[in-house]
Image (cartoon, rainbow, N blue to C red; front, side, top):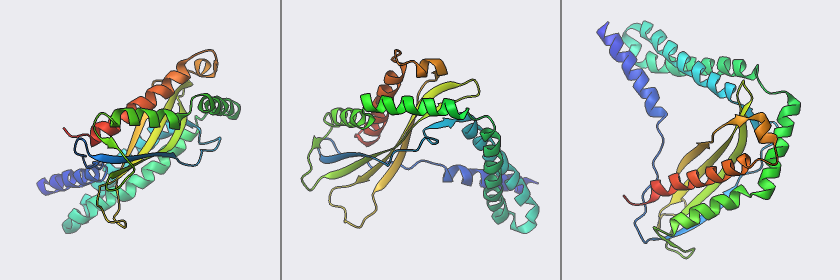
Length: 241
């Protein structure tokens, strides 16, 4: 029984290890860096507004599935050290599918989702999120390093991957920004893979009426805050302690 308990703990620790986030290499103060901020292809209408109940249900389903899979693995007898982690990974996939199905059942009406998408599109036209992010990053980077495109310099590439709205069952809407950062140290070989890390900022939510109100500044404030917080996190990870 003790061995099985140890196996369960091991399998769960392995799952936690797989979910750990990579770390970006710190850059010495005053070093020359090149900073590039780009954006991915724009999201479509359906992806621009997402129901948070999908994410909540997926997370819950995956967690329950992983534990169930690990417990199933303990029935493998002498091979439990192999079966427990494998079972956890296999069954967690089932949990994700089941959880996602529950979340999709509470999605917004198409008309409402379309109106939110149009509001988000309008917001990006008047307050360019890429420009906001670029300015915030550049202002903070100058306090630590020398911005220069000339080699040798550490190359920092920031990709704005997603900007979308979330909605709860109570139709409270919030803004989410997702960014991926790639860092290639000065002098690295051209074929060397850069170190990458993903960032996500989840803003506060408010009522659907407030988000659709063009006279309210909540949307603009949310976008500005997202750019500021993402830039702050990135520079904090790269700056020397």
